[in-house]
Length: 317
Image (cartoon, rainbow, N blue to C red):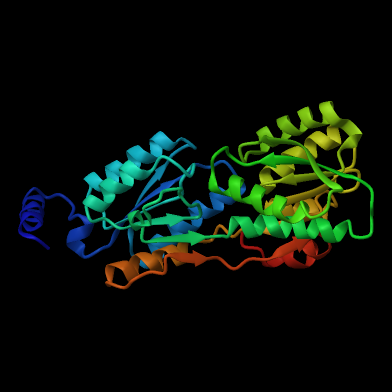
């Protein structure tokens, strides 16, 4: 502990105030979360909070409510508080250069959790941990290609995209299109953001159904919450989800498994939110002077309707 910090601690003890975390030898992590827009995000937050507690790390947690300006304010607050490590899940990919430069100038390492940023200078963060979103899109596409194998009929797809400009929305679209473009029978006829929320997923699906009706063969949703909202819209339109319209989504949260067991969702591509233990280990490694891999990829699978009942009891989120 430096002289300035010792003086601060001595003054706090003399005043009868609680001793701050740095004086107790605790690691302090500042974490800025996207928000609470989905079942996935709630599980991610719970994993981070519980893991920090288990690891004995003091967590300064900020909810950005899906606004980039809130995340930038939070990161600046963490810098001012001289936390040991900053981690965050960026709302969108671009616009982070200035605040990340500020963290670097303050010698505070930054970990990107769950989502990446689009900045040329990759020295502004030490590691990005999370899923391969492009591969998730590819897995969704491969499942559909296999499902439609042998059929020559046109396949009209509507797409519910995630938050505009976010890494998962960009990458899940890219990976899916990469696979289906090999066969001209697959055509995305409508694509619009549902902002990763159930309510917006329902609203946009209602608009798709009004515009295209029974022309729609497949719905590809960038997350389960939007798919669950869309299922309500399909049912309210008098159609059968997973039968009249094939539904593919991403995340594999419990709500998706319940929908699959009920026969209303065809498949969910896994994206694990349980990044807490991995993040806390990375924070500890950094403080111990270890070098982190620049990219840490989460291992995940694909769960079609047929395995949902068997897999459901072992799901943790």
